Image 1 (cartoon, one colour):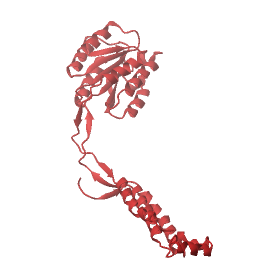
Image 2 (cartoon, rainbow, N blue to C red; image 1 turned 180 degrees about the vertical axis):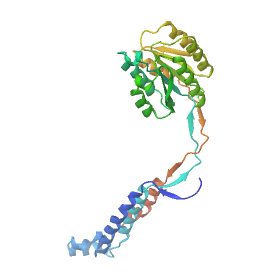
Image 3 (cartoon, one colour; image 1 turned 180 degrees about the horizontal axis):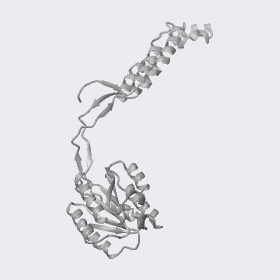
Image 4 (cartoon, rainbow, N blue to C red; image 1 turned 90 degrees about the vertical axis):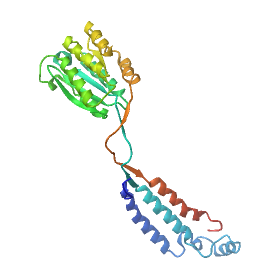
Length: 299
């Protein structure tokens, strides 16, 4: 903690103090306050109750002050008094998933393209706390979304993928996998997954070499096939220590991402700003004046 400066997280609640003060002034200015029994009780009955000690003939204002004080304290608590804290540790997940998607015309113009996007959404839903990233490729590869924990933004970008995103014709998965390996290294991901969404075009010795590089970095390469997986898929999955999924295996794909996740946490090397809300503790103070309302022998 760097200091004791108090900040109000919800200061608008203090505006209610003005109508509360006006209400208190109006009540206190009345002759009998809220306990003005003289106006509603028969005088003879009131005198009899006073003899029995059941009425406070002094018309004490203490209960009213207690009620107003408690309400004022409650409003202060609702305003959210908070202390700044910068000594709180935060962690990031060292296990991430990169989705590498072929957006060449042979894939995006296929009738099964929407089903491939659905597979991607299932994978995103299974990330949980793991960061994710998105690479698109055709004749060249590009980073669509850096590694991020904002899965909503990642899903929106995935939904907008089309062949128009990549200006280069062709299909060069080896360039996309090389970019994926570099992105994992830059993000210091030590136990990640790379998922290649492809129809198989362009797979060969160059992409197989990149699959081995990804495995050497401690990550896994899996493939989602647009059509019936060719033999090259099995070779790449074996070298990349991953798995192969067809478009009708959405649940199996999500389970692969979720159940086999390696969660490794590391403390962040930069401080985060946190606010400790003290409102709940201030509410306890409101109980003190409220105790006056439970005194015996008052009316």
